Length: 409
Image (cartoon, rainbow, N blue to C red; front, side, top):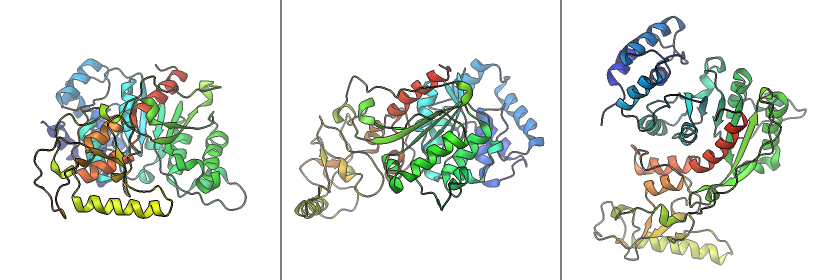
């Protein structure tokens, strides 16, 4: 499988035009996808030379969108930018690009992405041909390209609120502050934020209260009451509740917003199950399986419901999450295994009950990623990445409603 324009990347990287050496590849891949925009950490005087080199390589001018798309298709990018974008967006705390996938499907072009995890950046690059910038706190809001929609799955962090309300300044030292400063500078038509359900009650609701206060009163956006949506109701067999926050710039004159209605068709695990026999490495050893059973029995004796869970084919998976019991809460029975010889070091032998972990591809499907989405990292990193991702179908459904409000689709 070919690389993404290795000759062009090598030539661009050879320029002494970058003000942050660690962000060179991010700057170059952003430039290749959007030659008309000067990316962060690129010297202004050298930008025109870099842009001209890109256009010479593609033998096109930026207005020739059909030729531009063909150039990207030849570069072997699974999910290239649209040839004739209807709107632009940025992808903050991008992870592996769940927001990007949903927004590109609606005709949007990503003009800036940011993600700090190096393995998530590998997956993002493999699928979109773009390396996200790293530490967003080091990127000036003035250098972020103009955009129509700001998308962010920002972390849930407490604010240091002491005494009299300081509004915008209350959020300093948190990553939400970086979201807010970019909104303040770039004034996008709409904002689309996603977070864990726990944000609702975080610090007795004070964290969410501060976020809404900043968006509504300091930044002047119309922000309807946030809503917790369950991915299970939007086309994936996974109980995954997340809070969605949308906002609209005053210029859009939006006075109301309705979150999407649940999908009519509900899926079950069988709809995402691997079609063929999977590796024995996903099957539990007898000893580990007994450890899980003992663990659950101890908790049940105390009146707790904590422990492993086996999801039937006609059932709904628990939320896929990284860490803790994320994988053990989503075990399945699969009797198709024919080779019980372990391929990793295990204690005991492979169980004959057919109990196994879900595969990374099954987790990808539970999050709504198509099978064309490539997984170039280890299983451990893949579980982490899909566990941290947004559920694409829920994002897609809400995005469609948001984009209709600002009249770009």
